[in-house]
Amino acid sequence: MRFSGSLSSVDREKAWYELIGVPYDGNASRKGASEGPRAIRRASQRLETFLWRQKLELADLLYYDRGDLRLEQKSFSGGEQIAMSHSARKKIFFGGDHSISYPIIKDLFEHGEVATVIAIDAHADFRDSYKNNRFSNACVMRRVAELVGSEQVLEIGVRSASADEYAVIKDQIRMYDAELLRQKGVRAVLEAIGEGDEKTYLSIDIDVLDPSIAPGVEHPEPCGMSLENLLSLLQGIIERKEVVASDVVEVNPKLDTSNGLTSINASRIIFELLACYGMREAPFAHPHL
Ligand SMILES: [Mn+2]
Image (tube, rainbow, N blue to C red; front, side):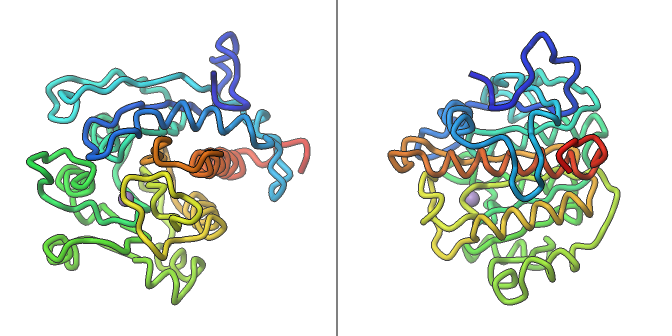
């Protein structure tokens, strides 16, 4: 099953955007996120592809679900190159535990396709090592910062870290945490982020949402964002920054509600990313506007 609205394989060359599942949970403590891509594809069939707010038919955007990218633990240490296409098309990956962001960003960074990274996440993910694993999903932004430079990393929505992590990030990483978002609102945070044309990777950990609307995650963290606020944040970031690739991670169907609420919200986020890309690049191309 392909993601809803995807071009068929015959028409794949017409695609402007690529979706890629990454069914991997080798660096999570509680397994299940490897089933995320399948659940998200299935959930995407349950939503209308006509987006009401934008009056936009998603299938008009021409995107192709390439299927799954298989990662091995060796991919994380650079012991094995990951097989990834390097077309000019924008890519949206969906996991998978959060550790998948690192080998993807590493590959894009080394090909000069990504310079800065924005992470939207309940957790700082800045431990040096977790359960003797430096590539744990709890360490992913630490590894990313070492790769691209800590001044090139921005974290949004954080509301959980250890004291040790906080000591490392407080002077090192630009951050608009959950408290600031709550006090000032999405618009003020977007104004503070500013505009820029650096090639940006946007990583969205679904646990940034409140656990009441995203319960199917390994580490639910109370007092999270609403989906409306997250979608507004994504719209604002994509309007202001040159987002070239993104991911949606940490959906764990084994921990989700029986009707797959977390997967539904993940596919809604992917719909919004596609719509934002389309509105930024070719608003004239959409006959319903
Ligand atoms: Mn997280």
